Figure (spheres, one colour):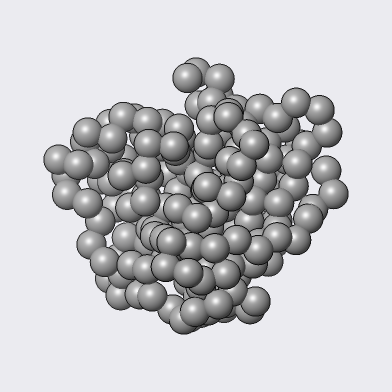
Length: 216
């Protein structure tokens, strides 16, 4: 379960940096984790994402974390949440190399927004966890319309803290009602960054992943 640094290419020719963890023994599936906003300090190296990665690895997932284009050792520049779709597609492809099991996609904040828009059109994604989904005014592209969200019937976890300043519970519940198969989890006593509650969030995401994958 020792992490391995990797590099992989996007369809538009950029080399992205990442890290992959392969479990001891047979893998249950593949998990790809997408980080927060690149222009506000987001990267794969955040305590919340570490906690999610550790919990998924303990449950026998191959886990790939990566930096979006323009972050640290990843080539390119910020793509407004549009070009980053290609980054997620490439990360899924790299994680699935030599692995035929189901793919679980996780995104936090900006990463959640991009992950949902990619998953809508990516049949490789068997289930999805969106943590701190930014649902107030953002500089990101619009989410798919209600018809497309309603037609998406793969399992989706919508997770937020009860004091999340970017993902109020009312808006989160409204999004859940538009999706075909959504579960809402609200962690009390924390906000968008889950300070000191990272392990709680990690366990919720990982337990959902196991249930969603086994239900396939």
